[in-house]
Image (tube, rainbow, N blue to C red; front, side, top):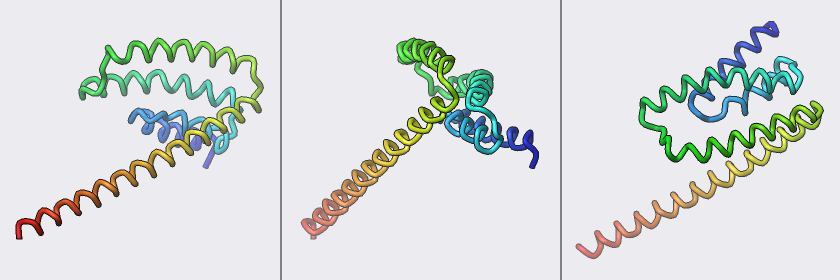
Length: 144
């Protein structure tokens, strides 16, 4: 596979994930740096440029499906804009190694959080299922 084919394949995959609202850049940036060999700054720039049209299309579709609450989104959007300004300035003055290390640490922290949240939810569902089946069998026994 040529470098451009890898970039296109990675971009399509990132677009699919981004279109679902799951952060396509989380996948796109590492794949652009690892699979396509782009420098960290360039990969992040490509991700940002790809994000604009991808997010516009996703917002239109999610809004049409009734999944967007504009009123609740305003404070989050304002905070995100402030964070984007800070992050852009940080990226400007940081070297590629620092960006890669920071992004890697972020992905690890996110993965650990997701793992614990998933296990917690699974255990809660299991307890509820077990409690539900016990109450059903108790109810059946009482009627008999």
